[in-house]
Image (cartoon, rainbow, N blue to C red; front, side, top):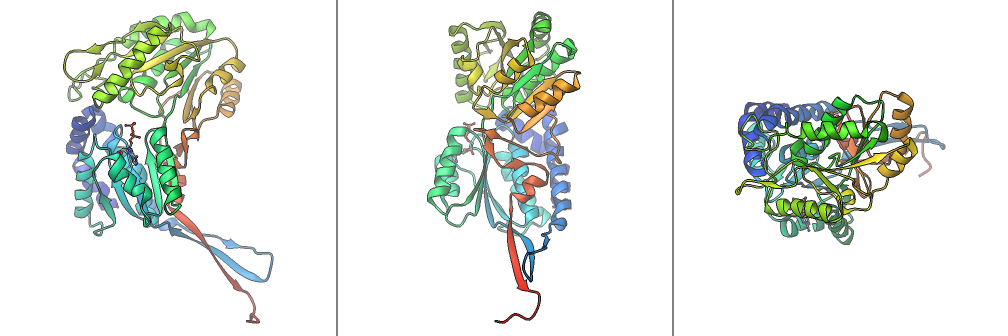
Length: 413
Ligand code: ADP
């Protein structure tokens, strides 16, 4: 695995370029963040591979008992198109470290880096058959993994709708274990004591990073009444700094959306927002005649029940709402079927503690957003799924516990 990580690092530019071509992701970000992170992630789990252990049990009778942690077997990974490299290894690195064999099905929009990773696995000496990549469409290749009798675990990241299908297929085939990381509509709560300038920057980052194609996007922003007007002013000015353009141009901060389907879906949500009576503060239109470029878009006067406040748009669209009290902020933040992440901006420790314990989401970022780390697991509450990526939690997902029991003294049988 360490050799594999080294080889990936030697090919950072090619891999970042493949993800830029396939997904419209920024080449500079791939080079500086996505691909180096992948190499480090593989090293992190390689380090854990020889530290897997069970427990010696006390036992209530005169028995000696201990547990073994064994690999679960064949792991099927169905991955999305928004983070083709990170998702490949958030699943495959812990699976390999646990001793599983892996089948990866990349999203049909973004198969190129996955094929490159398969080739590098061969070069690194990963034995044939251990890490397999199968390209194909969801309802055929993806469904075949989810319903296969010899696949022991399926790990899926994608839409809630497809997540349901994966669970159904697992249930009606061999009851394989399932981990799902699904949609989100994560809240970012900004309190009166925040530095308004920094908070506006953070809010834009939270919804525009990777052109909003990120499951933890902070797409619902709640701002306390005392700073609301100033915040709105700042947001409007700062949104202009988010240059949309060619993912290979270092000046671009957003590339194009992944494909026409997503592009059309996002624009139709924007139209819906306008029809429902939200105010378009900035953006709202496609850019140019070719490519799926969309302006960074911010809606104000959003009501909780509007579709732009309830549905995952998966694009550069922020819904801004106002709140008065901490109780109201918590209630509004939790008013969603999803529970992937949340952000809190405040200097007040009591507020930060109270809110972080009151929001039903798998990750809470205080005075930051996207505070990802290989050591820190993330995943969903509620309809955002279950099972965790990253950290040792992700390693344990690929291990199962076997109990071994023997009498301590001569047994009568
Ligand atoms: P999105 O809606 O964000 O495009 P999807 O959930 O449709 O994402 O796709 C995520 C992954 O799930 C892709 O690899 C896709 O091919 C796969 N997929 C789509 N439909 C199915 C299905 N019925 N069974 C298994 N996998 C599927």
